[in-house]
Length: 210
Ligand code: BEZ
Image (cartoon, rainbow, N blue to C red; front, side, top):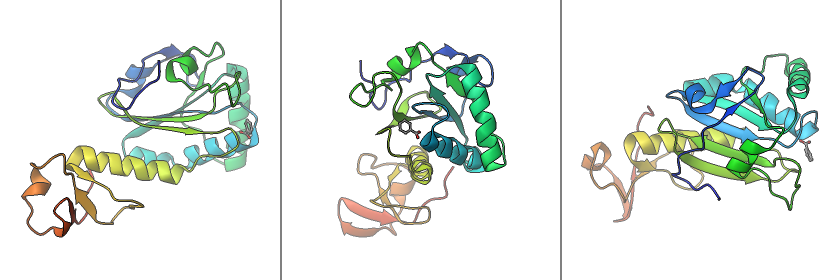
């Protein structure tokens, strides 16, 4: 069955480069970025994991824990992590799950057989502290993900959770935000200094996140 936004993310126990992990226990009260990649020792995946490792501080500032997954085995994961650490001259401080039997990949719908029946594609799940799925992205094998966009979405999701505002097209940190028409009460809606373009399109300055 396909996972939808707002579903509780499936919990699981799995081996990883950081030992055995019970997903929900590992997440604790943090947000989670759970992403799959097709195969170890492949070029695009190498750049992706390197970028996530280098963004460690950005994710930590947002209270987000990151965790990867592929269907390769633990030895492959460990050897490949060494390569990535050599390339980025830094450490990969997050776990990569071993899913040789494709059980977790199946739970999360990470295998798209039209792309490849044997490997996970580039799935992204952002999971809130309530363990609900806040975002699902699916990239094909051939296209590396834009993790700046993923940080942008996390910022927008957290603004929505914390302040009941929504973000316009191409929004970036510091841009104006929109009063959420589905939440007509609350702190932001008491403001009178909004900029009204239409009664349903009211901008306010971006509240401080968190
Ligand atoms: C890669 O990560 O480079 C890759 C993986 C599978 C297919 C194509 C590229």
